Image (tube, rainbow, N blue to C red; front, side, top):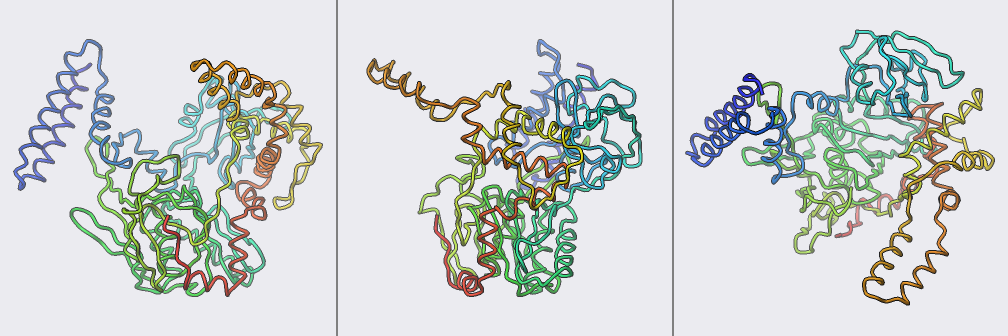
Length: 553
């Protein structure tokens, strides 16, 4: 390792240690000073004497990860390289051409150009293959390598050679990078007559403006009698954006969230007059609704201002702050907890999860009762419990496997190639039986590494029976395995409805972008239908927000 790397590594640790000692000097924290000196010495010794060359950046990252590993899942070290991704996550903006990409064979192809992005304006479409970038052959490039070459400072240009999906011709284009803003509100429309629907996907910088524009457009288009706010899958983001969004629905000066930490606490109140102070609202949540999205849903519930529908939310009620560490590296650390108007904290009692998006079972003794503004009972223990609980819908592993392996998109490419002039209506498009039979034939020579849960269970039972020397049971299990049909062709029929939905979404996406896919699924979404039914029934809506307690667990 060169001397500069060693000095950079040790200097960073020493500076951090000195800063900490200065900060906590009044506490006479001998233990902190001792551990910082040991850390610096250890990094120096490893850098100088370890048998193999040591990368100082990796050494520092490993030490940093170790320091935060016993805290919570959200406190982490962000290197200079990782900060660009963090900025995109918080601002929703980056310099590039505005398209998702994916690997297909030896090349990377365009997977989803965003509407009105440089890629879209250049006429690039899903399935177009990237052959070269600035004259460099792109065969064998990974998606990361392609992404790195396409991103850059807004206003700069690069040349890209593509093979068109439709027609197969080769074209060389000059693309100008722009500041790409990923919209926080990908869709706003009508779920039913008089019932507006807004899907809000994240709380990045400026999402309040997106939400306000969506509401204003709906009010111009028709008589808005109720509004569905969809926060399913919204992982949160900037707290201040959540407060501003709440200001559209509750009186000015309403306390909607407070933060409490070791050093300070802060109260956040709405600062403007509401534009929809009395409009009936339904808020959709699920196990992946988190953070700022939970603040909006929970505050509206606590203030008896909306009916919350779906499944218990994720349970992330922690405030993260970034602190500079030098050399353009940062520490993202938890500094406080969120508390919504009833006084409850939405943070899950247990940081771990039984499965993604679900809170572990919370003992009754750890759940506390709170009251909404109107006196309804609500509870803490993790996340927001909906007023109207609905069972989640899951896709089969087989259908998900087809999607992850790219078979759905590959068939979409083929569908477009054979029907280049077909017109698709986002709301009414439906795959025909003949179309699906074409997909089945398309899959005839494809290998799908899928094993049903039933076959897995039978295999485990067979092995257990053999180990326990229960020969008769083993024979019966073998007979059951012989009767089980979970081959690809059988599964294509068993899970037909789910697969059809995925194919339809892929084809609609190619004609109408992401907004078209959302619109396509509105009519068949059970939670949206339930929300519409409640908003269309003033008596039921009033009963829920005035007298219905949420379930305890």
